[in-house]
Length: 310
Image (cartoon, rainbow, N blue to C red; front, side, top):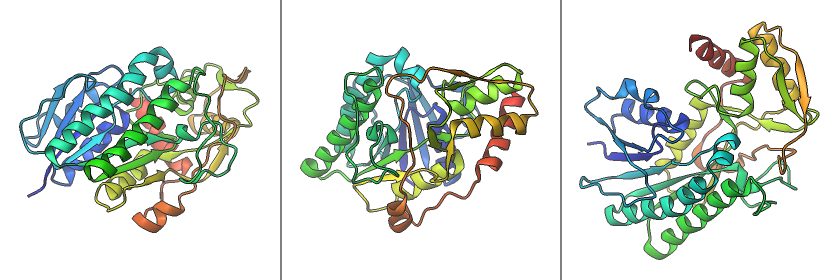
């Protein structure tokens, strides 16, 4: 019999895709979200499934679940710059108090615990590409520090619970991910560019557009997370697509794929915005047998179609 999985932040972009994948794999899923940045519409298709249950709850408060739980996948947190700059205190609280509460539940249930961390723990990196052994270059008191440091703390307390309480913990460091179910006002490059392109508005590129990112399609990411969940790995693992693009190239590609009449305009680069970001996925390939398979062009076409339908 498949075990029950608790997904915190399960109505968010990544969390909702994860809930859907788990249901198709035969797991029972408890989706917990306070809907600060998540949307109930993301999981509406699952609400009629007998193996799916939604609980509206802020995990910064005590979590009470009476049933047995085999896995806790902790994905609760604002994740885009627009969100964590709007909700800095909530971001810090869910990374600290929320993670502590979720780990306490994992300890009580003897459940496997998987933390959704981020490439933001590397900050504005001085090493390129970034491997799990790199400690990062983070400004802890800058505006982005609320997210960076909440995730760095979350990683630290997760491994402390592993070492002290022998909890089977996993940490996935997620690099830029995109796909259907993103909000058009998400604040990240791909939804911003697609929304602007589809309405023929100016596409806003920050700086000169020469800073780079790597973009992983959501289906590839979910596959990597699922493999990590079932693995015996306790140390952090990067999951992302190492194909690297400048932001300006991304903007031009979206203009081409949408047939937009938008013009590209440039604005000043935000404080502490990373100049480069690209995962070294050697570890994921070796220990998970994982590789991304969806090209940026194919993933963008699917994402653009989703935005058109909305």
